[in-house]
Length: 291
Length: 311
Image (cartoon, rainbow over all chains, first blue to last red; front, side, top):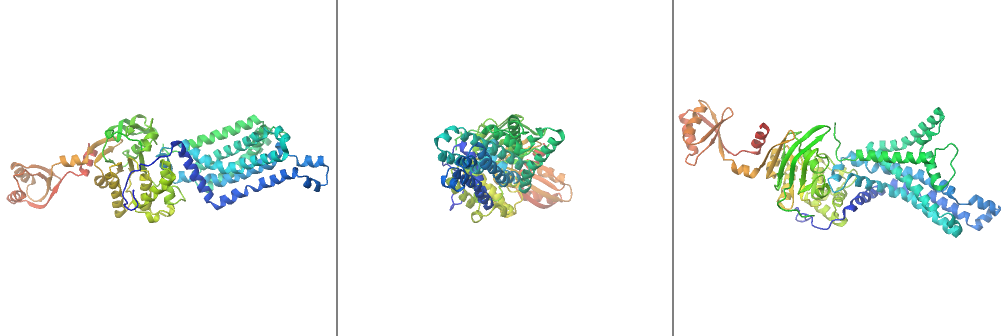
């Protein structure tokens, strides 16, 4: 095709390697997400909590600030000490909540519009498989979620290492990978679940409502189960409890009394992720066959 | 694009069967199709769209095989789809993006590097006559414009086989003429084959040189239109009034012409070279028959289609 000639001509130029095709989906997905001012604002707001946490870490290592407190150095040290629990409470927990809110606004814009507008035949008529399409969309969601969870967590860990010196770093070398795993486990399960819900509920606002309501509903159901059956197994339906148990196992933190066991929490998270993948596999197809 | 031998059929069907929801939709199709533009004809529910979807790997065959340029659509689906451009019948869009964004995405998914994809996207929009509207949001396009945008995404990567599913559905006459002109240009470029699925005989007749007619999921007929046209003798369709039509036909037949009664008042006549039209009028006058109308005709695609449906 030539613009001036306006006639058809075949393409004989170079082609990109096929393994790069899912990345096209990711790139366009990211462009669409950051095209929204609301999403961009929400994304930037997610960095306020890590900023506060960085101040908290800095205070713990600043002798002039410690002097202002007019307390015994040992007391201040205890108050401002940085350990795995601090990372969980000051970084992981707030960032995970913010990541959920970010996924709430981003997730339904990725797959559901394609399904609602019958775009799947266009994607799948090209050398692209269903799983590659899902992987492309998944990475498009994982990247901003990792940017607000994994990236600040690791930056703060490195900041702490820098300020605390070799002794603390040597004792807490394991903490970096553990924090990274804690973030990845959460954002991966969250992304899969959000994409699966938005693949089932094709209408964007309803998908958002479903993503928001479902954890609240399950949390309530879990609480009722615990109260009625006098058990702790209902906590497996409570997202927060499951997450705390998994983080406790990764960060070597003590479990709260009455919380679910880490292995059960892991099993639950793997089950939810597997179910989400199954739903995505079933829903993401060129055409649905009416029986 | 990978090269394939010129002798390789565009599409090979080998006992292809497809069952959807437990129902047989395609029943043992076997054919080797190699025309430049192939019409896929059949009434609604004949299996035209299912055949296209099977070729694209959307539905797995329950038995048999299908190949595109020699590539099995199941075992080598990716290689087969590399060579294909597809325009679906139903609306198929990505909400909230511009025309350029939409076609460029499809070009990049077909393997074009980003800069080439953008260049080809602009060219494709100018080619389909939508250069001015290419930056508009897809949601604001009229139905005809959406059809053209779908066509643009199907040709942007320069496929070797273009699968078009009812491309003129719902278009007004000028838009339909434009769409058919575009398809003919692709066909005449010599670089791409076209498979046009339609239930509109005129569209197929205007564009295609071969026709595959489906009926109830089976092949009713497969023919080369040009050869069919050449083989069909030109005949005269005579419309008559009054007296004995059969006697008139018998008299004309006695002079060496082939005659057949067609309908209530018509007679098909194949004249030998020695006989002229004025002879028909002479016999008609003698038989007290009025000749109301006289047309030169050949068997049309409609005749071929109707014969296939009756068979």
